[in-house]
Image (cartoon, rainbow, N blue to C red; front, top):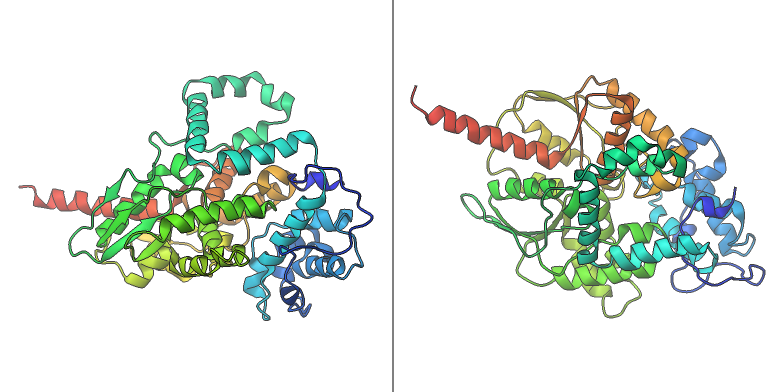
Length: 457
């Protein structure tokens, strides 16, 4: 299998593989992290790809051995197995939760991918796709909203239904990719245009990351998040000038694009008097909490990014720490919780979402088996590795079905898209909902009941 089956391109010139030995430059996988792995094997049962393949090379320990071999010059960076395994990895970070030595595996695989993309020539169409995505659409919030508006017209005008019925997608081999398109929000969230004042006693001011996909496909989740925060005494602002967090670019090996996006967000969020920077998308939160590593070699941003990363919190993490100033109303429902990898493993936020769910009267949480095992989304992994992604999705949906819950709660847009797509394919009438949307419904139920109670009999 060729390396191009597992990655998106970056290099634009043909490079002769023979002279290159080991890694090079400041973006090399950190040697101290490579050597911190003691090969104990605790990571094996935690790794989704190892559990599917049972191959040593497809485990975190095996991939670190490959990285070490390249670093020591015993293996070429062009080696097919090395490149294949770097991209077969979901970068879900489950190995980090299991590792007794504290190996920062994410730093290794992202750096290794950057090394691959810096020297490996790719076909022109794929180079153009990377350039258009990471240095075009994701780099410009205005361009991203324009493209999202075009997609909304495609979805709302009836063209999407016609295209799906025509069989064109099957002929082009794009059926699965098209099925993963998010349903665009009626009204996008544009930074700088909306503000939610605190209810009751004001407890502080928080800034919300709008992001890219969240602001156009899940704008309703953003507004639900802001309403919940306001109900709990916080002014909510969405600072103008922010943009994409850079996670997709970094995961795809384009660290320079990721750094450019990170710098813009550092410039934006360090302005103003805010108490915390809140994120309701697990992948975005993990990326922002690691800006200090991404910008560690930039003298103008190294210290600033470290200070900013310390102020970034997932919204569930923040609300659980601050405590609810107002208890939500009742929701009579049975739910199960699917843990986003970059929330539970990268950010180590696991108890807090469950505490918030437990605060909703009438809600019954049924724990899902393997709730922290990756669902197969992993950014754009489901598009690049459809076979492995589908295997993991089926496993996740089977586990969810065993709970009997009619609602799956999550906290990351990629997971929600993946789960919803799989449920549609199965014809299952199960709702996928963001945890903040569920809390917002509970507060709305409380307001409704209060109004009803105040009406004369």
